[in-house]
Length: 428
Image: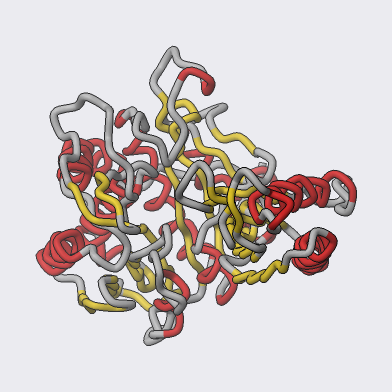
């Protein structure tokens, strides 16, 4: 009997069995606030590094809880520090704040009507990736943990991060990268970081996770093809950069199928835009196109960069044109610390309930939470928000005008954050 009791006490400490849903009554009680905050953010979205109203709402809320607040980190970021009554580890919880240049089509009372000029075009702004829900969930977590700070053995840093989606036209650090550079993980020094991402194609309230590499590294490539302008009726008098570009694009699509060892790691090379010319009967002097690269391995990443350059330059040369290739490194691989994931899995399982936590394959999407997880052990997981009775093929994916979230699972995210904080503090 004593041996069984000893194992019962020891197993939770090792992260091998389910634990308690901490402050569960508080989590249930705050659900309506989470939804209210989320809808407010949704109705007033702001693009990366322009989250002025958003960050002020966040900062004032944290200050009202007695949390020490630092504003204007990485331009518009907010960092809150909550010190528990007892010494212990420093845990970072992160939410991103920016919206996207997407015009919303969903007919909800809190629909975004915001319009801006972006990349020389008038567009709507929308929380089409769910960052509004991330902020609301973390604000609720902050409120609950501040209420129970006398029970905390350690410190919690609430990181509200701008510009996760990138910043148009700026070739310098932003978002999580800049927050790290400006010391968001320092003073006090963070021991571990947790983050979540809502998912419109996962059932509401369900949690998905993966140990190790969970989201891809992302890079951008830009290719300019310079030919010789001529009349469209006399193509032999010039060098057609549009035709050459199309041949290069076809060539780029052979990289993944013929050069990458897909047994070891998947990869993606996609062209996202091409621009050339302005008239039906003029073959222009140049064509420009750009695209994205997704990889999970450094050697694979280097190989793809090399092949893009070789294919573009040599196909152009063979046609009498010139291709200029520029490749910018983006976010690194988002990596979930293996030991940390194993240790904290029961915390997620308890929050989501029996059978609602599932391990998944890595995804080709990218996340700049990777910069935090590169500095300290990190765990990044996905929280479902798909309507009951729907299938993934029936609902709109992220970054689209019809993106929609079922709000009933948000409180699972709050519960998961509370569980992760309390369980980690008790394990250390």
